[in-house]
Figure 1 (cartoon, protein in one colour):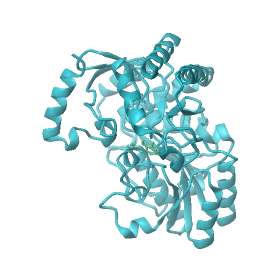
Figure 2 (spheres, protein in one colour; figure 1 turned 135 degrees about the vertical axis):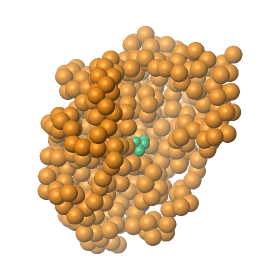
Figure 3 (tube, protein in one colour; figure 1 turned 90 degrees about the vertical axis):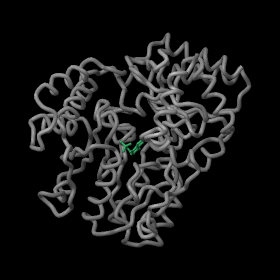
Figure 4 (cartoon, protein in one colour; figure 1 turned 180 degrees about the vertical axis):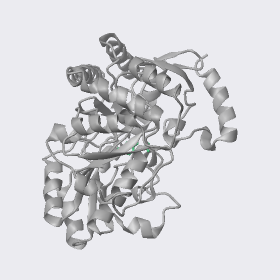
Length: 426
Ligand code: PLP
């Protein structure tokens, strides 16, 4: 029977772990049912505890751009592990990966490694506040920058799914320094600058939003934000935790030809190990301790196993001139296939895609911001999700999430997926 062992494990997990999971969106709460317990993953496939195979469109929420158990990453981690797992001292490999990352991404001179995307964004905001000597930040409704207090204000994905606009435990004092604007709505940003003259340290944005489904910037939105920041002495922070090393070697900065002041990374940069990073020009980064006054630290930051995984991943991406073309071609093929079957099956839908990030919304309106994304039909999505899962296709258990396409997918896998989507929506 499907999901039998997963169901048993979930019952046991709930006894000892809140909701049975260590990160809320894994719980399938918005789509119902039992989350899959995964035993192993290879290439484009996950295998659950019931030994059923799934084609994976979550890919650990982004990191596995080259597929699961990617051999150079696995080998690098195994070799490093034999030499000890953590020293709490500088290591040569930290400089090696820093040098490579700086060479791949535009407009950064120095990078600091942390343990998650949350830490990267939280530290980037502290750095921006320290550097500008201002306190307020602007974030966009539906964007998610991790679970640090100042970001849990109208954050997307997990929080949107559960309909919790903010979280208990976040103080009013913290919330009042986070100003909210609407994605792709320049006027909403201008109004905040009018009302908070010379008080705004930074704008933080997912340059392609991925936590309200995939929502691209329109009408030169990023370029316009750059101009507003320049005019007001405000720093522009690109949260490239999803987009970094995924949309291009140099991420969204390269793709959209816009320079950010601080860039945050996570996911791909760690090759599947817990890694985040933030980076900027030297004059900004040298505001960090121990050179500058802004404090930031981590016992396991720059951990050798994590750095070995990240380095192997970045080297593979850097040395493969065709990777982003292949990802674009595969995701475009998938998009065309989905459009064809959903149209033939008379479904109302909108598909958004940038490179290897793609989302299917069951709504007729364009999706350019959080409000648009919330108009999508949730019951239709639930059915879609479960019908695909039964057919061995694993997409994110929420319509507010992006699908991440991996290079490990073959065209046969994509055809199998399109066929399953046809059967699920016929
Ligand atoms: N920023 C973005 C854009 C994200 O999508 C995420 C996580 O999904 C984060 C930050 C937080 O990263 P982490 O979950 O590694 O803390």
